[in-house]
Length: 430
Ligand SMILES: *[C@@H]1O[C@H](CO)[C@@H](O)[C@H](O)[C@H]1NC(C)=O
Ligand SMILES: *[C@@H]1O[C@H](CO)[C@@H](O)[C@H](O)[C@H]1NC(C)=O
Ligand SMILES: *[C@@H]1O[C@H](CO)[C@@H](O)[C@H](O)[C@H]1NC(C)=O
Image 1: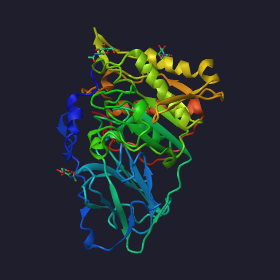
Image 2: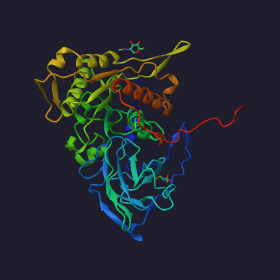
Image 3: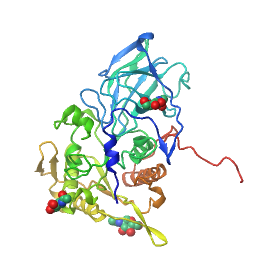
Image 4: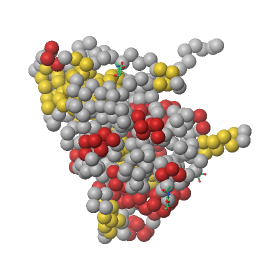
């Protein structure tokens, strides 16, 4: 079963995007507003991209360029205006989602070097002053491969931006195309990782996921390194990263992010693909390195390893599911719960590529999420990825698993998580 076509990787070579969403082969009507403005024509108070009131969500490099899936920014502001100027390393036409306080996601595409007006006195709800006060602005990149660069942000003349307090919980997702929402309507913003992070409520999250990537540190569908290495770096290893950093990406400074309470890993679908030639032993070894690395960075974090849900096939007059590397993922879970590991934990440093034994005993911290039975054959789209509905099913079950395993409560109180999923029957009888 091929999960990521070469075509999809090839798309990454374009630096201007087309802005068309195809839905079941039809062009989806979008009518996103054109938000580009001429900055010189108005008067604003401007803040540089390093203003401490701006929270950078997910991974951003020292040039304030975004990487991986669903990276974003958030800040509070006074007044009724928010505009952002994008730097030259922005992929022209990148679709971003943005929202005012607890109101619904809006979408627009942004331009390299352009200034875009996201909030203005005409924005619906701008005159409402509670319960979120001051208003907040949040913007996230929808596509896993395109990126934006923040040059500066602007508010009304005499107005200011305000730091929003961090959320009390943090979840880190590490994955591939499945976690990055490839082939979903709003890509990362339609994926299960986003759905869990956002859907838990009172939770901050980061989605370190990129299509085609293996956990094994080798070339998989053009990703030159695997997650057991790349997770320790700021950038994914896309053409965009190669263009800016060659083979010397910036190491990720974990101090720049909130300490994770929970790490969710979904990796192996690409390792299991015969085209990438990853042996079962290599898969297990590198998966262990990744978890040993996480344990080194955040010794108190809980880790959930997900059983992959491989594709379905028709089996006579019914359907069945492929089970590649299922036993291997489970064996990783068993290893981290064994006396052998807990009595003598090993820490992996992804930068120096060295394993160190620690003398401190560890408490069990790795959990196994059995995904069998969540998806059915029609939850997988023709491009071998879950449909929007499939992603929502995985997110819902995973949220429930987290509440049960970790005793976490759900705090989302109503603000939209998934955009454009409101479809229903509006007549009571046909
Ligand atoms: C988004 O970008 C594309 C390509 O630049 C353009 O054709 C499309 O109309 C854009 N605008 C909106 C608002 O969707
Ligand atoms: C796959 O891996 C095996 C063992 O490492 C090696 O002998 C073989 O040449 C590889 N095949 C390809 C197509 O790379
Ligand atoms: C996962 O769940 C399925 C269905 O309940 C079960 O058959 C299977 O044994 C479970 N796998 C593990 C590793 O517990």
